[in-house]
Image (cartoon, rainbow, N blue to C red; front, top):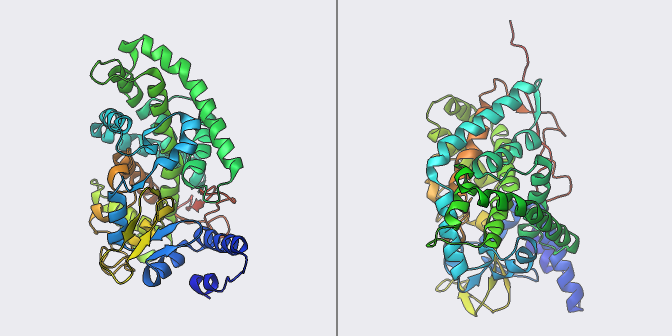
Length: 422
């Protein structure tokens, strides 16, 4: 039985019981059968109003919603972000704080760092492969290790590994994946933010005192710019933005690496092509295989917003739907990436699709600030793994992604032969 058939059968007379049952069913499908759910809704209920949020499914409507940041805002993010990392741009739309700090952070995350990023990723993965003996758990050894080293060596946030991993998991979970509103998850996020800021204060203060020693990393550039009268930022704002470098980096990058390589390993014909492309000196053809694999298993299929004013979604279509201020909204990018109006022949795996069509890094005013770093680091990590002769997913259950009951992959094992046939 499909989702809508089950959903429509929920007919409790008590509205609270009905809403609770509908919410549980929806969240359960989002966790376990998201692709099936989004495909069904895109086809049959392109704008689906339910007790959790208004879900927008088709590509034109998703683009419309994500382009109207004054109507569909992110300001509810402040309820979790501000107590954790302080007032932050990702919880503001077109405000002075957002415009100023986003411009500064784009300046410090320079695209001419990308060759260093790619080289660092290759180094990290090569070290992990060399230390392994024909088996490797991709999540801790590559998925998380790669962005961890980027945060430390490229961004310049040099806290210990265990602290960075704990802070990243807790903040990313509460800020972007806590669909049920679990208060224990929120408390863990706030505690992680407080720990992070406590660690950062002496770190930032010391580096501010020696501007000539701040180094050529993102934090060093941020500290120098913060002292410039034209770009001035208080130490409090510097700390919040350094926190932000971590929040969006580790778990999302890890999930992308793990899910994309799992998707490629499950497609033998595509895998053979990708392995061939991975041998080429120019990585651009190979990168397309990773971006297309992520379309089939994206980092997230939802971009959450808050409806600030009454409006209509799908204007001029047979499914035009009025929405009310005060509702939460999910722009379902995972559904939009299978809309044939944007992705012709959507069920076919085509690694040469236009890169700009994907929603992997968001869209519009709140597109991922570290987009260009991710678009290099994620495919390069997978490219290095696929250069290992005979790499394959381990036999189940080790070779199936294990989420360990959480929102992010926890384990996924690959193997390869350690001796070559005579």
